[in-house]
Image (cartoon, rainbow, N blue to C red; front, side, top):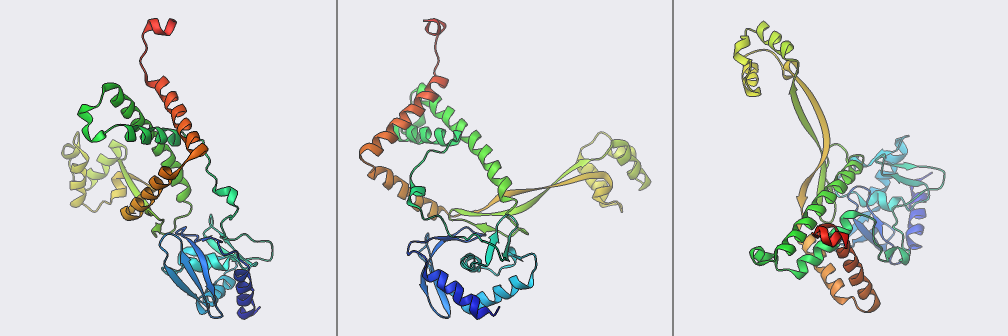
Length: 320
């Protein structure tokens, strides 16, 4: 099928979108809306930055050709820089679909999904996630608002105990959740290419861990190379490294090397974080009526749960 036919099918789909429809890019997960649909280009606007960007028809055609040339789909990490919105828009075409887990966009004859976010207003209603870190974080925010932590030495002991407990719980639970998030991210990051979000970016990184092989095996190989046993026996790893410098042995001859992949923080956009934080503060400050009372009651209930766990009671109190 000629690209012109597919192009006009895509334009029709874009014309039928609701004005507030939001799409999300498959790699950086930036949110954007369609601002204007023209014969030769599509104008998009990013929600976080209000930046407008034209997406040209000829670039859509190039992407279309690459997808149709790849039976198993076009790999998204082969996209040029800043080309992330193109597959997101193309996914609105009824024959093209993005598989984020596999990192590809494919052409299919069956029903397809899109990068269009659910516009159902019910999805925007506030709900409480069933996560320990969420409950502890609410309590921590409440504690930080009620106490002047810039003068810790002037705080009461019981307030310091509660604050320390909450900080410890948030750190532990947040790290558990961070590891879970990292495990999912590893399946979506490709070829050490950084992926950005509103608050920062991450990238896939390889960590090398070395451990010495069996002692007798290491000593035997070094002796063959003229290194006396006494030179490395009972000393630290740096001495073995020094011996490697003057021999033809490689690291793998004396070390068992394991590589593990992990996600590390590559950058932080403090300005975006501060803007988002200010918005949350203003939102909470503007909360009134029944919703505000429910939020306060929720915080008090959660605080009571923690207080029961952290308060000290005498043996007489326990038995009363």
